Length: 334
Ligand SMILES: Nc1nc2c(ncn2[C@@H]2O[C@H](COP(=O)(O)OP(=O)(O)OP(=O)(O)O)[C@@H](O)[C@H]2O)c(=O)[nH]1
Image (cartoon, rainbow, N blue to C red; front, side, top):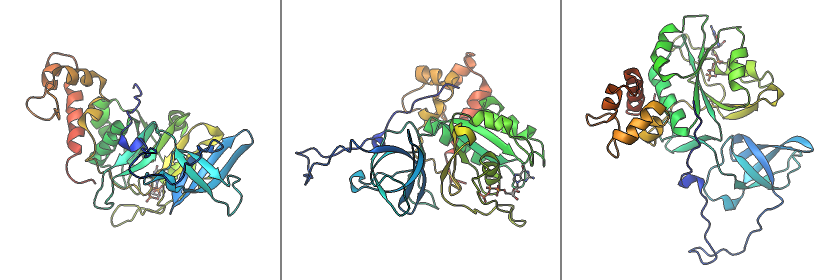
């Protein structure tokens, strides 16, 4: 699938009042030319764990936001500029003075569990949707919503279906056949070579609801990650969230990154524009551009995609899948 570069939106742009702006600046700040660039690998209560990789090697630095960042959030995956004490020695604290432009933003809309729209992770290019084939039962509607989040973010989705030792993946895979989403099936104690190949050289966010075996995978992929593994509750069939903050982990050999997101339980999708989802379907996007009225949500009777499919430009199953995904944005997040 072709990778798309996401357009920047207003959240990606920092507007600083000019010298004659409405809020006069009391002093002109230096441009921080001496700042070092770092990757944010974890965020915890206002402290940011940043990794610097330079000629002298690799070091972790704890940093806080500088006031000049305003209200813009710093998230895992951000590339930032650090000033101040950047030695990384114990009890030192650097300051984040700049967030580099993001190549992607994975977001979710406010929902019942979190009243704010948030960027969850920045600069990732792949979303691994981890779902168990059994114990707990797979939830296709949730998978659909996670696919929508990936397409909206301009990230390539990857289905990681765990616990194949308990049941066959065939019926679940049938649902996603028309979408052509790459998938990998894993089982207890099985080889992970295929998954490693799909993660190599990429920045992949792992999402999945509790108990699907995400921590087990992370521990197997990054042996010193030491992510807590929970036990699926015999009554509810759900796991317990034993870890709660996003964390970027480098794959062994420096061959890409995985970002674990244990705290992300649901995806509010109210912010998603239908065209961002349609864009991920190359065979249908062309038809939408040619035949659909402006603002078409592709779910109404006047949608031009029906005639596009009837004329043989794309398959009905593709259109059905697109519409299922678009509809999955409606209603409450799971
Ligand atoms: N049968 C089977 N069980 C698995 C497999 N992978 C993980 N498990 C079990 O599933 C349970 C949940 O695994 P976790 O790795 O903690 O799941 P999680 O998705 O990280 O869950 P949270 O920590 O709650 O977010 C544990 O008891 C694992 O041993 C698998 O491939 N097959």
